[in-house]
Amino acid sequence: MPLNPFRSEAEAYRFVWLTVGYFGLIVAGALINRWLGVAVFIVLSAIVLFFYFRRGERQPPVVAPTRHRSAEDERRILVVANETVGGETLRNTIRERSAGFRSQVLVVSPALNSPLKHWVSDDDEARKAAQERLDRSLARLREVGIEARGEIGDGEPLQAIEDALRTFGAEEIIISTHPEGRSNWLEKGVVSGARERFAVPITHVVVDLQQESEEVR
Amino acid sequence: MSGAHVEAHHGPPAANQSSRVDARTLGMFLFIASEVMLFGSFFTAYFFIRVVNHQAWPPAPFHLPVFVAFVNTAILVTSSFTMHWSLQSIKRGNRAGLQAGLTLTFLMGVTFLLTQLLEYARIGFTPHDQAFGTVFFCLTGLHGAHVFVGLTILAAMTARAFRGHFSPEAHTGVEIGGIYWHFVDVMWIVVFTTVYIL
Image 1 (tube, rainbow over the protein chains, first blue to last red):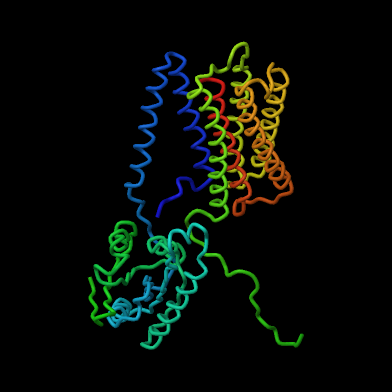
Image 2: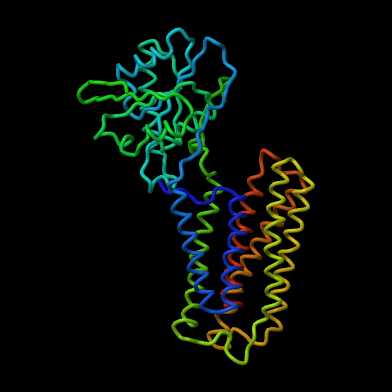
């Protein structure tokens, strides 16, 4: 997903000063010699392009969850899943992680959307579908005695996790995906990206709904 | 209506609040993107007559008042600083800083626009004088129109600031207006460099 280069007035303000510097140097060069001005323009533009493309490779900062004062015997688990939350292994994993604790489980269902629909803010259908998946997931967890609450997250899974961490101080994240080869999330590096980005233990649960086989990694 | 209270939902569903860029801010950035395209079309005309037509800029016997435009540039760049100061002030709960910053920004914007109008009156050529005159007045006039819109936004922001509408928690109106003002500033730097200097 392409990122908007600016997010705030502060960044627009910095851009003003960078623009002043950029054009100021070009003008200064051009006043000395026309070809020097062209050379300065080429060099500065190359530097700008270098930093612009390098920015995309930069790793985002590690995000730690917002700490909430919780009791010693309480454990907060964040479950992020699209349509695979119903698997037995996932339910067992949640049970294992919360054994001996009063667990608080938050299930986040990202509102998966196409890039075009995302940019034109047409997310009604995506959110409706996510809500249906979430309702099914919560019902299945309730059937096996796991009390959980849920919310719809951002269409980008990593962003959905980050949003949830800001309001729900999870001590553990469980990400449920399809197997490799069929998982769009794995192809996009959601699990590896989450491990680099979030300072919380992350468990990856692979759910193969076609073969009814599941695996914890 | 019976005594029972009926919960009814009206309007669109609640917006998805993500920590990504705020929807209103994103709207301003998308608007600015369309504005960049508009300016781009005017710059295309400018570069056409300079690069393709090899026309001298400015053609004899006309002269551009570079020094006055430079002073105007300094005023507008400084107004970006006061705009930023006003936003930083309200983020820290300093209402006086917000009010002073917005007032100064507004005054500098007015000064810029009045100076440009005076420049038009004394410049010695009109939009009818060759393609040069048309492009000069169109580019600087388009920018001037944006300064006028910016001043209107600033006037509303300043009035709201003096009525106590903004706080450290709620200052999106200042943030979005500031983004527009910085855009106007950046566009002037580009216009000034290309039209007056190069």
